[in-house]
Length: 314
Ligand SMILES: Cc1cc2nc3c(=O)[nH]c(=O)nc-3n(C[C@H](O)[C@H](O)[C@H](O)COP(=O)(O)OP(=O)(O)OC[C@H]3O[C@@H](n4cnc5c(N)ncnc54)[C@H](O)[C@@H]3O)c2cc1C
Image (cartoon, rainbow, N blue to C red; front, side):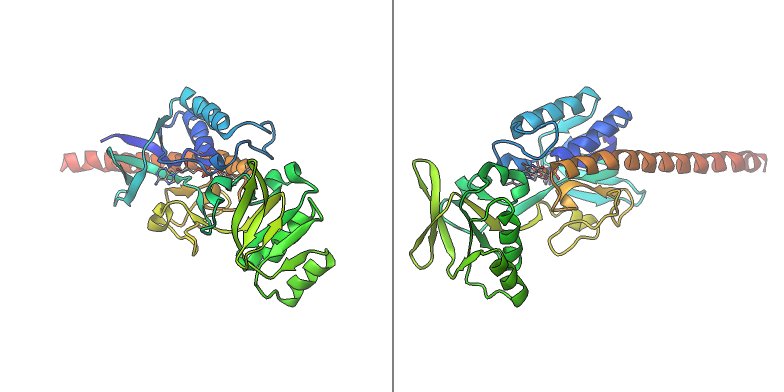
């Protein structure tokens, strides 16, 4: 069976950054990826220094090339399960078989749970936006509609206000006094209704349709949605929260020795820069973990050698 120092699951920026470090450290490293990184929802990457406007395809293609240059291997396959062994190693199973790993880095990302609105799948990441950090600049001072889960609606509406004062919240939610005051102070109107679909004319978003049959004109929408772990691998190996997001320390160490979790899989708020940094940060931590394991093995072997002559003399 093939044995790798590290098996990384997920070839988004977090997993590939970890692979770049481990490859350059000479560690036999295998990366699995069974789907699409989350950033593929957009046409152009924003807010990633040095890469503003690059397409996700180009960003990931360049990143993969750099990783391959240093000897790490990338397989286009989903990992189905990871089984911890008694000797501290892990059996990693994919469709093509099982490999063994001394460490596992989960960089499996998150998925966004979107409501079943007409036109939403096509508009996701384009006319339906998740965070003004990524594309508020492109629609600054335009007309915004904010909708979605009630918990963070007032926060989101006031946050996008910093990019445009023309904000309407569409929701039947009864806001508590603190949230209502926040909206009032910023003159953000609340339309008591629910968004049911997006209206496009001539290929351009012109508004949203609502449950009561109205149309509300807008140029961009912001959705408050939940995201959850894209894979249940972390939940099967270590402590996770209610959304399957792994609980780790600042270095990506999970509750199980030898299992590390980085990027959106342990921080659903991470932007590309944060996810890249987390992958880069975990590289030396995994390498040190491997070093300590190697030293422990050598210590054990030396101890066996030390008692062996006395045994032979008996
Ligand atoms: C609409 C939208 C727009 C965004 N725009 C920006 C932006 O402009 N700038 C910015 O900085 N950030 C942006 N982000 C955030 C950005 O997408 C994330 O920060 C980034 O994708 C996190 O990288 P990651 O490597 O942690 O996860 P991902 O990029 O999601 O990679 C995880 C990978 O793991 C794979 N995977 C999962 N399970 C398995 C399995 N069992 N086996 C094998 N592979 C598996 C997935 O297929 C995926 O390829 C945006 C997010 C959204 C939703």
